[in-house]
Length: 180
Image (tube, rainbow, N blue to C red; front, side, top):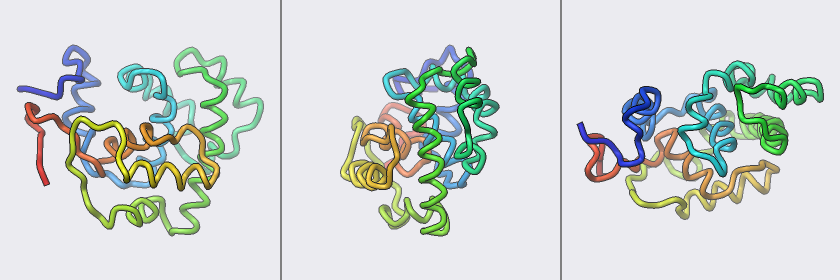
């Protein structure tokens, strides 16, 4: 079975992620927050690195619960910085806390983060390959930055949109390739 070239077929987690999550629409609020956090940590690293630590991130970040993450204090931050099972980057940890606060503000304003995203997409799924940004990721990134989020540049947001299935970018030779 042919998969996207980036998928390391020797890594079962990566294959499972490619086959069952990436490009599959999932607008569950907890999943959206999880992917926002993980994509932020992925900046400058490989997705495979983050994916291999996903379960440990889930534990460290309280099940990716934004209500809990937004309350992380100095003691919790130091605990995260000493956790060898996750990516120990102070700026990314601090960004996660700030992003949780903004995520909750957006949920309050739009009734859900899903509704916020849909205000940009009108429910459309985008089928495109060989891109790392798009006008859509540019717009969402810009809005999130205006609201105070960090580590949400257009490339990170494009990856986020792929992770939650708003953008489907499976390569033409992949068994999951679809066109609009």
